[in-house]
Length: 296
Image 1 (cartoon, one colour):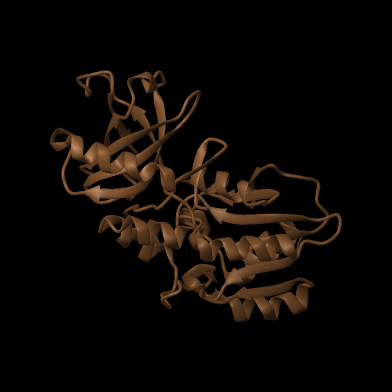
Image 2 (image 1 turned 135 degrees about the horizontal axis):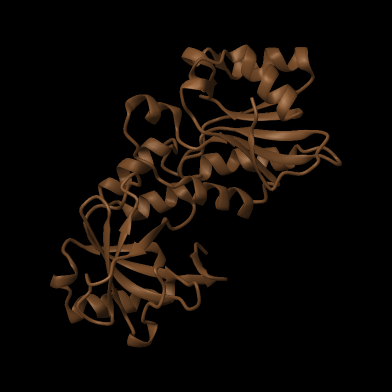
């Protein structure tokens, strides 16, 4: 089975992290760290993944924390050398766990190290798991590292399902704590839906899980110049923005918006001077690095 590659190198041996990585949260980041740490001299670190989570393919409905493009960007930003991927569909649902090992890990990826989560399953009918990988590793000459659950300080296991629910409930601060970064959404500017220069509306891929409807402090990731704004989420795929400053006027057709802090219920039409003052008072608590706001 021919793989799709991003940043492919002529590597003789790969340390491969396996997973769907929706959100690339702190648990996923631990897998990436292990893969990087375990790559051999002259070898590379690699992620093998799918364009969409298999369980969502079978449900017939996408509810994603992050797009495939965002996941790839995060992989590379965390230090992964290569990304190998496949579109998940009928041709893959019938692949046995044994074929996954021999055809994907051994023949295509040249895996010398394999890293997976404690709950990782693969192959037709989820026939393979971490224990099976270890058995196969002994036969085919690759080592297997199984990463245990990563938990919050309160003892809650971090997972993509939980993050989707936190976002949908408007619990942005908790979602950020699980992700390890502020969630960002790429959207297309919709002409004519803002009635003044400082108001902009963008449409987001409806497959993505947006934070609950309400008012948020946000940062517009710059193509040329960034700006703080108030973001209002409404419906399944709409974000309306009110820019703090008129000189931050949007001059691009595509915007990336980071959500930083939930202010309250309501929409842009209910925005008050008190809301703007409260939002501005929060700004010193955020740290800008390169073009994005990052956790300190």
